[in-house]
Image (cartoon, rainbow, N blue to C red; front, top):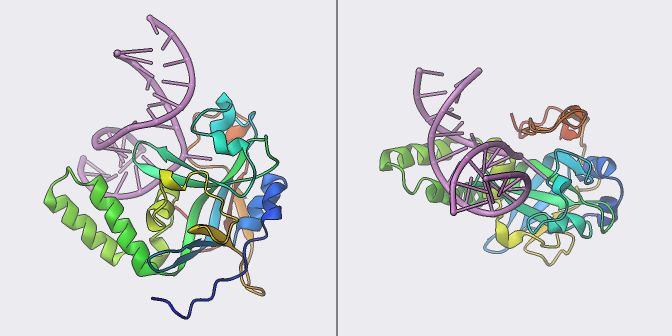
Length: 227
DNA sequence: GAACCGATTTCCT
DNA sequence: GGAAATCGGTTCT
């Protein structure tokens, strides 16, 4: 379909093996690439860091379980989990093998394949609304058609809908350019602008100081950042 | 086996 | 600003 697409350079994944806060800043601006049946590319514009077993906001706070096992593995691997029984979330594992840490991809700015993303959002919505009235479903279709490109993946669950990411992608190596889902480097010379930071979202269960740690990072002023 | 809760999103008051 | 949808994980009984 997109015969003119040239894959960019792979993401320099050694950056993910270092400390997660540095890795978070490195990952901002990088590409998320989905291949197969056309191509979808987006720019990562918002991430959150979950660092170590003592981070009481992290899934790793209970130790190693079947769900979070890949957080304890090598960096550059995808950790995908289901939240609220409804939405998938994508993380990029960071730090040394054996130490549980990851970056939650909270928002992506669509660059290529926006129609595929919109279609994927639609499929996900149809599945979720299957048991709802046809009236409700039609309203959702209209809403998605009118949604600006910048809003397609402006939340962690929406990123996974747009890129068709689910349990099948858990433990996938995002640093292997041959993977159907992988990371790419931002083009040389692309201006990234400033980076802002603040507390993480949706972790009200966590005690201080974890609740207030400014471990959410985003590209300042980017229109695709989540609300 | 039951109760409670969640790294979300959308709709309604 | 509050609630619902929905299911897997954790922590009890």
